Image (cartoon, rainbow, N blue to C red):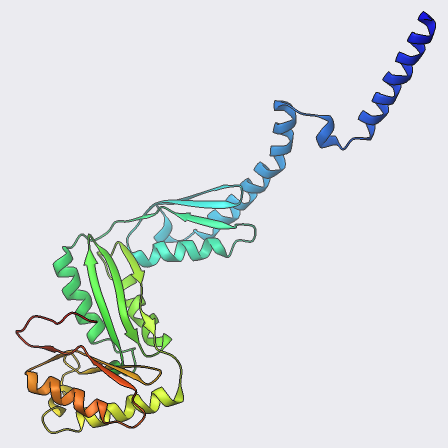
Length: 270
């Protein structure tokens, strides 16, 4: 009987050994040593990615920027002089094959400037932007808080939107940029309406003075036949006439008059 029990135990042990041998290596081993062995290839891959990512930052503007990679995620730290460089560093990381995400913790140093002065400087630059076409058809808004710039409003195409973002990004003193500019829909009908509204508004004797100074145009935004008027005019009469002229253009569905009258409080947009 004892011999039979020993024989049965031997058979059981042999069966278990066969099962263990047939298991995948990852299931045969566990514990710190096994986890360390499994992590080694990932670490080697991260080290390789980190070296490639660092090579992408081998430029003078990135001399104070560091990159670390863990599990395919690149973390950028350090300082740069312009926001443009911070944004460019992130773009460069996304061109490294194997990097799945980027944490951009770079701080923008460089020139210190008050929000008031920075807003005035950016407003002037955007107003007289020589690379933007058809400024009359852009109504881009600007807000500065603690060096962070938020762009909003409307651009009539992506060229003008990108031009505005580029101006802000390359201006010393800007710490961060939030692009909330809406690009108006691409439409031949809307393009026709833009031009006809401009002719109707600027062709009126008391309103053509607003076409002289590019800093003071009546701006016209159009989305699917809906017209919005922006800018500052000299009187309530000019504001009312602009609305009537725009509303009389064939194909216009509606007109929202956001024109402000000089030296009067701005009306809330509805």
